[in-house]
Image 1 (cartoon, rainbow, N blue to C red):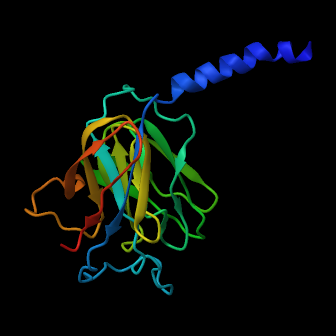
Image 2: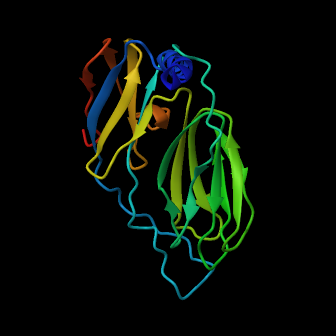
Length: 229
């Protein structure tokens, strides 16, 4: 008799999961080869002397995203906040990808003040100076690339890519990525890295390298990018 008490909820859960997951979907995977490091430009002096900046030699991963996905739209942003902290005079992570409408927290773990700001078209912001143990938040309500800096420490830099759909990924240490459960169709996939200089220079940096892909109802499509080329 107890088994019947749980039959209806179990069936309802199965039906909900079936509705939440596309009936047919494919995956995209690949590797992004990063460009050579650019020649370092002189950094402005730090306002807190006696301590070398720690962000100069850090290099973030690439961001891969797909355009043209309409199945499932509009896409609701997550209720949970994303996070980009400030520690050791650098941002962590150095590259973050989020869905449009997502709120990002910027906690400060350093024993000195930071002031996160951006003058990007996708997001102009300035969080103001705040100290260790404090945090500020910002909601990113416009798609595009946001370049972050710190007003106090010239060596600090990071990027946030605000995507129009949830089909994006950040590469791992080996440059690999996987984007799962993509509805079948033809799309354009892009790879972006902060060190890549688009040609021509006036091109949209979020479209640095792109290619066409076709995703089937199952299986995996491979899309590799060589940003050195």
